Image: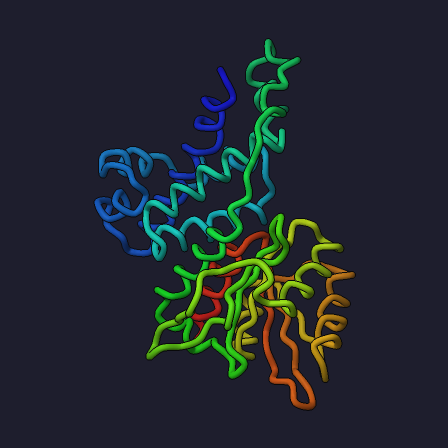
Length: 289
């Protein structure tokens, strides 16, 4: 079995089955789930015949539960808010990156011992789509019912590290009515502060490549849903970076609330492996409002 066939069997099939279960649990009909995932209603029905735990067990053979939770949350957010094309693009890019990382090799070789010397996937090249990733995250937030309430007075931005540095929205993200808006498309160098912040955290935890700032709200509710820290007072951007990075020396956090200081508005900083991961966490926080 060639690697692309194996990734369908070991990754894509259980992922779609898991997301189908998650969407049905949120009240979507099988027909609507099919539309959201780009598959037929009979295919959804087939996925639902197997228990959700079966798909989780298959995926936990090559990822830990934390990564599985993160990936599922991101995929559900994309399916619900960004549309089927962005969902499929994200799944496809994840599968290719997974093959290129060689993380599936032990599982593949265990299933097919004759492939013990296989090294096909080392020739795969993954091209970063950082700008697209940030746009995808913004689309999730733009369609979110309560996310506009999380925009602070200093406005919001979301930044993901890419080959050209931090990519974010020039002029930041603002509110129009009850919806988020941006005047331009994301580009490198649009947010020096958030780029410096996530770059410093990335030095400690290379898997963290994205961050967004939101209003200092729903702290207690966020604590019940994810890993949260609190820092401050911080009286300058440099001090914010110093204080936020200090908590990452001991652990990894989803959200760090900074109490602000003299002339500095309190904000919360949401971190993730990519911009979509960050957006999916902001979605969860918005449900607290």
